[in-house]
Image (cartoon, rainbow, N blue to C red; front, side, top):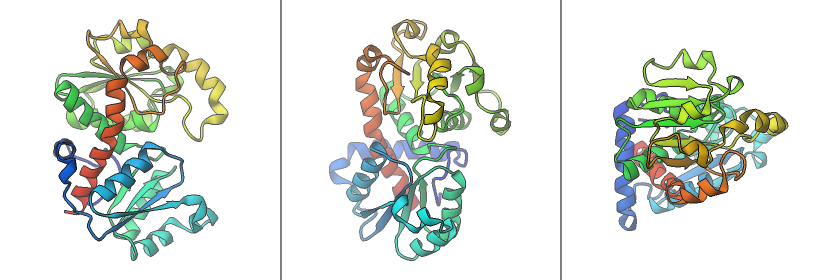
Length: 298
């Protein structure tokens, strides 16, 4: 494994190995292996962030390295320099790169031209680091994902939903995407996904029926603000609330990649009832990403 660009590119064995490593690194946090000692890793962010930036900066330091934060608006990228040129320069100066941006092609091109380990910290296509942390949380809280049924509710064509779809396809657990027709995964995307583990359901109550994990994300992601009113109107029946959770399996858990907009995709009541697992899920971004960086420098 040279880069983490998408879950689509990972095998079942690679995903399971990363989760095992993340759990181990979490348990041994006070004696973390210094695998990045003497290294500098660049964080190139074209999108704002809380959890992603903090978890990567802390993770790099805990692994013995030095993080360098670079805002896209303050780099020559923001003035039109091609990604491949920036990559060629940084590849000669830093040891790894973590990129949070819009286009998946920018991350792919950076990895290709830089010659250094590159991590997708979020693009419009995928959010692999988030789903690795989610899988770690399932491993710790539910004993894993085998024979589990997961429901993703809301915008089923967003980056988080797509990464969940690839996780299901690679690991074999059942995933139901509950979304209205305009927000269901694109046919062109689903044609690439192996058949058998992923289904799409337009009725929210049927989507969560029999599920062990009910998952949601913000309905208005960065870059979609102009669509806010329409999105909130169409997606409102997919809010995670007490009535909806009654259709899930007894003891089902709610997960959210955060930030959460209470009263929109999730009620305050449900959010607080499941806060323990949701904020552990957020913490696990640190450990899952440390596992990724550790693997990339082997």
